[in-house]
Image 1 (tube, rainbow, N blue to C red):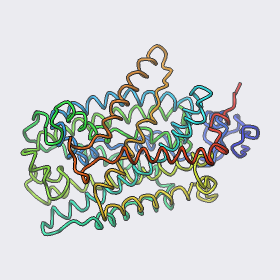
Image 2: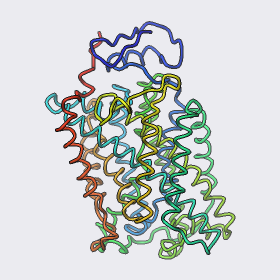
Image 3: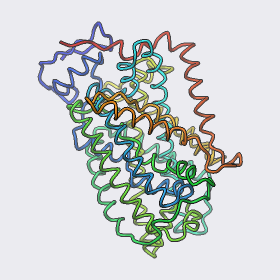
Length: 492
């Protein structure tokens, strides 16, 4: 097989050669890479089971639902939480169907910004693709910091559960978060070839842990929507919906690993659809079970551990040891989610740099010749996490606002351009309306009159990030960034 750099006039990949190693992929993979004008630089280590496990572990809806449960309980209560989770599951079903269709057409690590570049109206392709690329990089990088921070917080919560005299400090959370991130980066850099095998094993833990924790039972399932946050029931329920959105993000993780997946055009959409279905089902069933075991909601929300699920586990088992054993499953899976998040975030950064969209693009687009990995992009993901988690030393609220930016940034990157025959228009309309609704409420604070310490600063951070990317585009990127569509070739 002959490979050249990403130039539409020089890319030449023979489609009829046989597979000689994992880097080649099959004939369909080589044909797709040729059409998109990209050279195969990464090894295709993933198959269906491993990429399905990868997406399932990154989304991990039932574990994430427990981790962010305080948001839904504060605004919406158990009734609002349960039914809005179902609504979001259905909504993301439409969104991910659209993305799966585009993934089958253009299975590239670039994902959303490539699709916008290729499928948007010609005069908007370059600019819209550039903004989309920045939002995708921003969302995945801050998402990695968020999952590392949640992991560190959960470890702190376990310490507080077992040692009541322990006083959590912000710098403790920061150090634990950095340790989690460093482990994830080390694994992605040194043990990347083991990642597909590890993901298949973690998938088993994900499923078995779900079954084990379902044994808890209780009461209080249909408590009315709470007004601890917003006074209006409708507004309260919609603000609490963010607790349902976060656990259902991540089906597109497989997209950003598609250049490491064998037979990507066929397997990628299947993985995305099945991930959405199974994770949504696991999350909803676990949510109903969790809400049935709450008891007094105020007591659960005020737990010194910082995580309501720890208090529920202790109440259900009547044992700190039992609660600790159940919680360790959650902690392990959250750390595993960070591990897969680092892989995804680094590939997204690498792909956008490959297309000259980032500052120092040549540095981040570098692929280590021996490891066949974007090692500089992987390392940068650790740097970003360290810098963001340092904020926790001074202010938990500031970090929460910054890392939840990952949710705000990723929502506009879910394009709706699904050509599914007569159903395409319906899928697109439902997807766009759903995304628009949750995008607006993602900026709302937890209550109508928040103090500065409780304010949701996402709208300010989001605005500054967008303006910063536009400034860089005007000053530099517009001279170098052409957009992936310029490399696309028509095949006979």
